[in-house]
Image (cartoon, rainbow, N blue to C red; front, side, top):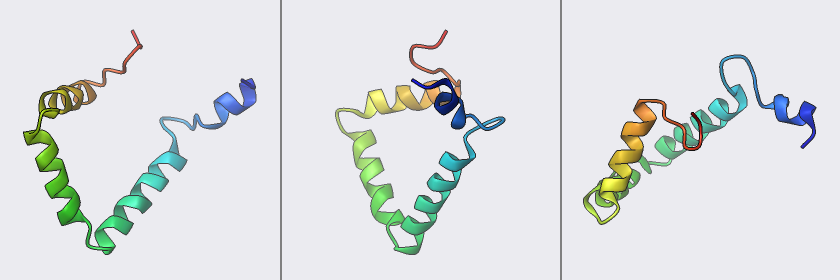
Length: 70
């Protein structure tokens, strides 16, 4: 990979472009009234067979554990 391209996404303390795209997507979902539907899907996933894995991933994220990173 081109070293210049690799560093292009690194912007200070974070990737501001990715944060902006996330916020825009979130705002769009709320404006379209999808938040209730998405919340129900998330609740169903947590109650389903993958619930344990989702909770574990959430806890790792809260602890800032990145897979493959020491």
